[in-house]
Amino acid sequence: MSWKKKFVGNWGRLGMKFKLSDVMDLIGGGTPKTSKSEYWNGTIPWLSVKDFNNGFRYVYETEKTITELGLENSSTKLLQKGDVVISARGTVGEIATIPFPMAFNQSCYGLRAKSGIVTSDYLYYLIKHNVSVLRKNTHGSVFDTITRNTFDNIEVEIPSIETQEKIASILSDYDKKIELNNAINNNLEQQAKALYKDWFFDFSPFSSDGNLPNGWHIGTVGDIIQLHDSKRVPLSGAERDKMAKVYPYYGATSLMDYVDNYLFDGIYLLLGEDGTVVDSLGFPILQYVYGQFWVNNHAHIITGKEGFSVEELYLFFSLTNIKSIVTGAVQQKVSQQNLKKVPAIIPSKQALSAFDEIIQPIFAQIRNLRDENVNLSQLRDTLLPKLMSGELDVSDIDL
Image (cartoon, rainbow, N blue to C red; front, side, top):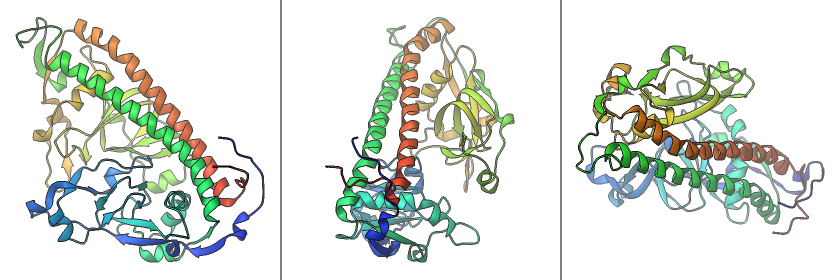
């Protein structure tokens, strides 16, 4: 990235001022009737905030899909490639870019750049830059909500299309590298899962007849995990807002925030306890976490015993369907008691040790790439306000 740093004051005065709502078309979403089976499990991805609350720019997969009938017979709309989606209710201000057509629910807005005013790429970074302002202007007594009026009440300064393209190009370089690292990590995880299945589900290295190898036995999850749930401490949003943003704060499914202290130090597995606890197929929602961090009371905190490393537990659970132990009609829950009852093949400690030697370098690379992504995200987010304000001059950049 060769570009020149130059303090130029408020270059935005050279651009034009707009209401945020005037630089884009605001598109509402919807949900097809869940009682109509013919509306669901089709070929059209259907977005909700749980599909894109991970900080990544693009969203490629959705937990649920709908059919053409579901699209035609509901208020949901089809977003196009390059559109931006933003969560507008409850969890407010999560954003992503749409890489191909997707429908979405009513808790989100689709944002489509107005041609000749802003580019799609610049709109994404413009919204990202203004997320904190949007969050401060939410409405609602029960849930924080972004309304159309929220966008009307925010004024932005828009530079020329040429300048927009230069700014978006600089920031996109970081997001492209982050995306590449994520793809590499996904591939590494798939390799590790395939190896675990081959060794401990199919017994390929140990048995040719499919029978349980000598020294192995059938037990339960309670035999191979240690739970550290008693150390969990939830923090309210108001409490977290007063804290310096230093250590990760995890919830049931994802990183939620950063706080000024930590409860855990090491490598752990988080398994969702309540809320969204399984995916659409019934496999548990897992987080492989490490370093110093805080966890609220919505995720089980797990390490291994009987020779199981955290990495081996991560692979075991990623291949184990737990739909049958989930309780709760309104809010799903995986209790400690039910989790410990899940059947588990328990290999010999020698087999686990041999396998662990193979996968530890894989997970070390995964951690290294994750750490690189954290650094890239921090650099991008440091540049974002400087580029948007004109503090960094992009006029000499050649695209």
